[in-house]
Amino acid sequence: MVKPGPLMCGALLALAACTEEVSTIPRVLGRLGVAGSASMGGPDAGALSGALLQHPNPIISRSKLTFSSPPGGIAVVDTAYHSGGWYAGSPTAQAPAWVAIQLGLGPTGILVQWDDGGTYNYRDPTTSMVYGLPGAYAIEVSSDSSNGQDGTWTNVVSVTDNAVRTRGHAIDFRGKSWVKLVITAAPPNAANGVTIGEIDVHDISATGSGMPDDTWLFLGDSITAFAYDRAAAHQPSFAAGINALAPGYFPAMINAGIGGELASGALARLEEVLRLNPAYHFVVLGYGTNDAAGGQVPVTAFKATLQTLIDRLQADGRVPVLPHIPPSSDGNHGTIPSYNLAIDQLNDENQLTPGADLYKYFNDTPGLFVCPPCGTGRNTDYLHPNDDGLKGMNASWTQAMRTLYLSTATQ
Image (cartoon, rainbow, N blue to C red):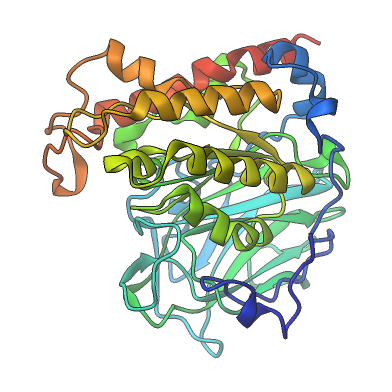
């Protein structure tokens, strides 16, 4: 995949942002060599585990010593996502906000993933207000600081034009013991400055210079945006569920859902999302609800778009994972079974590991589309699951991937 240079960024995609990122690990990272279906074996997750998931990347930042300016940085390691957090105010290059975490010596590579305090879509138009994400930031590392300010710090990531609600950066951490997020600007459409909900630092030393194995990027529509935000009402998340099932593992999760999006929308922004998150191995394609609404996208076109997404992801060394579309009783989605049949065909034709069977889960568990309990003041629409249903979606993913993790853990 051609990576955008300074002159390409403006024309790359209608939604693209020109982001300058400097890291001591190459941006493309080195792929795992699972690029085509022939190398993927068959549809059984246990048979695939050796190829897809060999190295855990545990979280090492939880409850670690933090220092920050403004105060309150301890909130970024308190396990609470998407519900406020550390308020960084309205920082500038002259008066930045920062939070430093003392990880200790040992890891040679880390994945630093930050999550903002409450924005809904992964990326919004510049005319929409956003709630927490930084507009510009850097990541620095140190081996000799004692309080996050003193000592020698090395800049390893620089982002000058961020417009998304969460990102992850793979960083060379050899000989280092501290990591620091330095925020130098809020976006122009920020509602109330910058708030970082959580920072997860994963130890990716085991993968060397390659892409971390246990990293998940959830592309999808509004149901995705709600379900995988890791808010308290939707816990345990897929990642927490896997950790309880196989304690040596803790998947890194990026929620890249955008409300109202069709599969074709994913195709339009795919290159940007992959460029912003080069360290994410599994890519969930949670589409179909909007495509099936009133049959606005024929099944054949929907299937063809997903096939193009699969091809582009595999060519980039990623592993696409397709779940079944949830049912809906709103009177506009009666054809969802035919779209799920297309997903089954794609999984079979491309020898993919199937994702969560969300259609079966909701059909087997009535009452999960009725509000309350629904956060953000939502009303019953028989299309978007309530908080119990969103929590159940995460549990469905844990169940669907259990063979992958358990068989790997016993190898």
